[in-house]
Image (cartoon, rainbow, N blue to C red; front, side, top):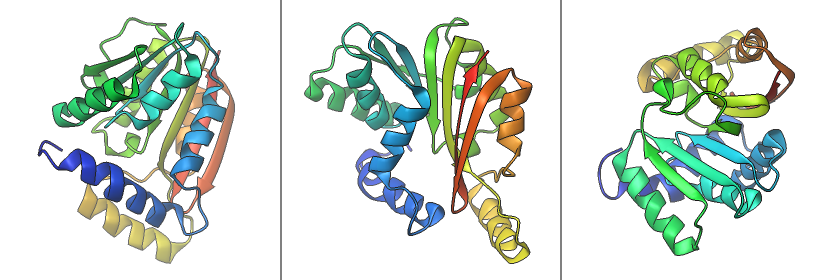
Length: 209
């Protein structure tokens, strides 16, 4: 994602269209994704929230408005092009409580227990080592902090699983079993784990003990 037109194409066409395909016709739309993220993260004014693989910062800016001027919304992404667009759009939005960092989700460059909430939507399945990324997201959360993840979910039926496997091979995206991420969160000391499966995707939220 390094070419100039990519952020606009991603934001207006690729991300919504691909999300609709995987979530199903009756699955949640982009506005619903924002609402689900806010509900799972339970943000309050003054909170610090980290948006992992933030892209052009759409969710980051929404979080910034929720936590208000006494809070902080930080976005991290590996793409300089995406972050450039995120900074420009945030400046135009007049938000001063937002920070962007270029970095790897698997090696988050933040101190432990730095954030009250961590969000990772539509990118977890693309990480080379997603469980390492989950470890780091866990580390940077304060006790009682909330995490929200939107990623893939493998179906149980054989025909669908075959089609999913072909997609995974072609795209490089990992397909998680429906209980895999729930179990991974529980193993890392999270509680109140909630999951919603839509099409071949899942929303998962939990609270760190």
